[in-house]
Image (tube, rainbow, N blue to C red; front, side):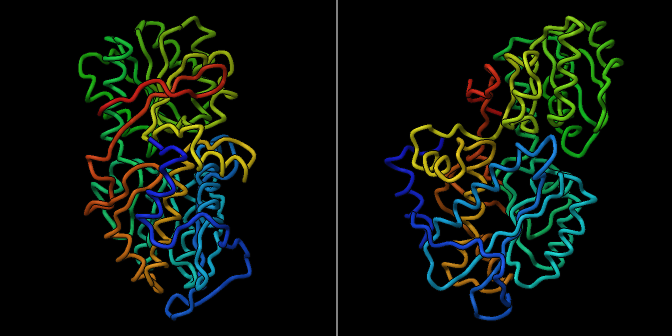
Amino acid sequence: MIRSSKTWQAAAMASVAGLVLSACGTTDTDGGGDASGEDCNFKIGVMGALSGANASIVLPSVDGAELALKQWDNDECEVTLEKFDTEGDPAKATPVATQIAGDDTFIGVIGGAFSGETRATKSIYADAGVTMVSQSATATDLTQEDQVDVFHRLVPYDDYQGAAIANYLTDEVGASKVFVVDNSEAYGEPLADRVEETLGDKMVQRDKTEVGQTDFAPTISKMESAQPDAVFYGGYIAEAAPLLKQMRDAGIDAPFVGGDGLYGADFGNAVGAAGEGAVVMCPCAPIEEDSTFAADYEEEFGQAPGAYAAEGYDAMSVFLAALDDGARTREDVEAFVDDYTGEGLSKEIAFDENGDVPQENVSYWAYKNEGGTLVPDVEVTP
């Protein structure tokens, strides 16, 4: 849970030396430097879907990172945040990673935001020694199968999420006939695999869709035959919205539950009235409305913090703490981040040997769509 206005600043300052709440950062894009020298003049990249149907899952985390940079107090260093819009597409993320890796002034990257783009780029960053801190990429294999030393993330992987979703479906919804659908993609498919594994014989049927699909008649027909008492979808907002609308148009009123790929401010608008009561699971604790972070964010950006805003703030804060500690090379930054521990906005931050959130820091929340807004419903244990 995000700390209240009375406590979060003190906790953050105690754990991250030099991070105090005065606006001394810079977003001047003319900055540059030499990551192999002693000058503290660097860039931090952030890549993800900054436009398109799924942008609301990413943009708040970028704003959170900007806020952390603005509030940074360091008179010796100048840092710019460079934004790269990959649209979440691995093919578009690859040249971005090549550009960042080849520019010595970049000492780290926040992201990738999505699992597919992260999978496509992490070896490029690893070869160049560029530390990654992802705010939202959750695919299990990113750390459990093909590890690279530079990859870290502030969210737990999908084996945990899949179990939490299945537990929510059975324990909170009371479902015994769950229809499981995925988008045949790097994030949705393995997440659905884990949901299926945990549900066991409480899954009545499994089906697959495609990224970019808009007509879900074959899946709807299978649902009508299966008569499920709940539906799980593993994928992103762009496909979840038409799927859910077509389900409701067909008279299928079973509860609809999705993973964190749907956790964005655009979800309520995209699904409209058909999405009332739909549930989205996320490894992100609710941000208390009266917290200093929420107030600062709203003052800066004109709206309440959204999906992964706190994780974006935390990712930037870890990099800035490395510079406060004297890191001046990519190698220095990587060593610092590997060993980092501290109280963040989103959780107690630490990375295990694979770059993952330690198991004891893992938690999930179910958010219910009420009037177009995702409202915290219940905390769920994986």
